[in-house]
Image 1 (spheres, rainbow, N blue to C red):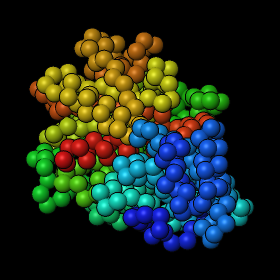
Image 2: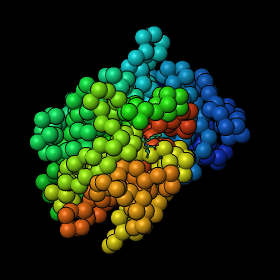
Image 3: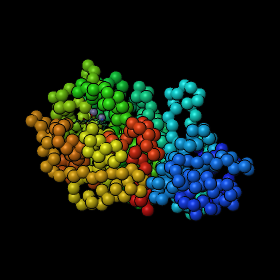
Image 4: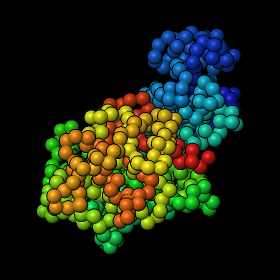
Amino acid sequence: MTVTRIDNLAAAQPADFTVLFVKNEAAGEKFVETFGETIRGAISDALSSDVVVSFYADGSNGRIAIVHGEGTMEEARLAGAKAAKHVAAQKGDSVVLVPCCDNKSGATLEGFILGSYRYTRYKTQEDAQWEGPKSIQVVGGEAASEKIKVAQIFAESTNLARDFVNRSPDETTPQGLGVLTKEAGEAVGLSVDVWSKAQIEEEGMGGLLAVNRGSIDHPAFIVMEHKPADPVNEQPIMFVGKAVTFDTGGLSLKPTKDSMDHMKMDMSGGAVVIGATVAAARMNLPIHLITLVPSTDNRPGQLAYVPGDVIRMHSGATVEVLNTDAEGRMILADALSYAQRFKPQFVVDVATLTGAQVVALGSRVAAVMTNEGEGSTERIEMMKTAGEATGDLVAELPAFAFYKEQLESDVADLKNVGGREAGTITAGKFLEHFTADADGNAYPWIHMDIAGPAFGHTERGYHPKGSTGFGVRLLAEMLRTIAG
Ligand code: BES
Ligand code: ZN
Ligand code: ZN
């Protein structure tokens, strides 16, 4: 998809659609000069209804669509997505977007690209293979230029994460995910290293290997690095993402309906941090960033780990497995303890970790937690601010020390489940354990549970059904703010 900024409508190349975004009658006046008196009626129709109104200019301007509304940035994104659907219904290959105002050009474009997303890989009918518009011209002054570039990167990186998750899980093996990540990462100048099973064994990643035991596919541990010449941070910022390519629950098997059937989405955390890392590289952010993605599927099998197994983790801690379906924390724990050696400025992990997160916050808001101590309020604020700016909303859950008591084990250092109460928090407390070294010194850490928002069962705004890519834009925005 190509995106071109143009100064004004007069500079546009012919396109299948021209989309005018109008807030009110007054804002529509400026189009009378270009399209003639009759556009007034079309604009007032658009304003009085919630639908997109099409208007056929008698000149050679092609089809004009009028979309109502652009108040907040989120409304601008939603208006962009509404336009995308209108254009898609008629398979428009090229489009000119005329946002209400310069400061909404980026958000309108972002919503348009996000809303144009379709996953066609497995469609065999020609009609269903249309991939969305190929060329977008967006009106905006020179001042909007940067915002337009960023919006394109945010939306395309989100779509990349969506693609990874939407693939059929039989195609997306852990090592296969490594290959895709290498392709996407190296194309934008990232260094990407995909560890083999032997390397994972050498490093002693007992949690990742335990979950992988029931599988016939080897696990992978993906390491991405963005290392610009003159970064603003001395210590790397790190992302860690859960990439369980399919979660059957293992021997603690999930029921199929409404539980196992969408578990290809259990690699969303990994896809999101990969997408955000690609975005950071594309924006050339002056930030040293290291991203870790532990990956395996979780299946029952002859060798599968069983409830009662005590696993020696990468950190050296022992974990009593009481539910093989609490596998995400097993693989993330190894990545979090491995992260210690980089002495990170802070680490954000992203995971579809608990069904309890969906119960607590629903499917539009992710849960965030952080370790207590210096900077904890600022860390949560940083996530909330980036969330509100992008529409990837988050809410904080508490992380009081006493929650960890629920993880006490009779035979090992801790167990992998904390009982029925506060399931999202105890999962977070389990992860937190691995952010500290043997002396109990922990790096600053933020955990984001995206079990609800990662995957949509209905289309909503600029999110299609299926993977939403929730979190890519939040993380990318957070990095952009830090870069200054
Ligand atoms: N991948 C699931 C969590 C999940 C559930 C993600 C629903 C998205 C939607 C995770 O591995 C899991 O199964 N967690 C268990 C933990 C429990 C056994 C302590 C859960 O939430 O039931
Ligand atoms: Zn599970
Ligand atoms: Zn899982």
